[in-house]
Image 1 (cartoon, rainbow, N blue to C red):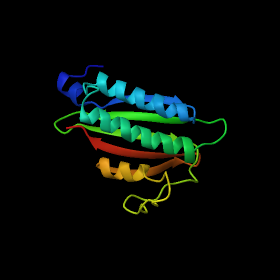
Image 2: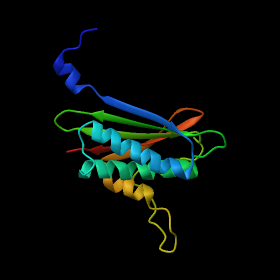
Image 3: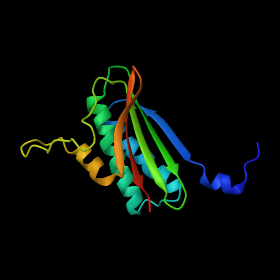
Length: 149
């Protein structure tokens, strides 16, 4: 199949990895995301790379804690949409469609005396938009998109 250079330059680039739902996987997912963004031309020391790595950490932590089901892991997918306004879509799919987070814009403020509960607030603050989809009865995907300019 022939694809001309202009079409190739605007094609989305994808990276997918499956990991077990463990605390160690949060670090691995963050590392894989930072490395992939570096390979896609967003150096490790850029704000875009650091922001994307933080968003991956938050979404993967939620999957490991709230989306965990014995014997099943989760999938991290990164999709880079190049062009004049490059965007990165981060998707984390876990096996718990019954445990959906609150809808965007409806997150409760964190309790002052709790050490957790701020991850999705960070996702909402740092991404252009985010949400949850259930494509089948067995999984859910929490996703966000971030501008890389």
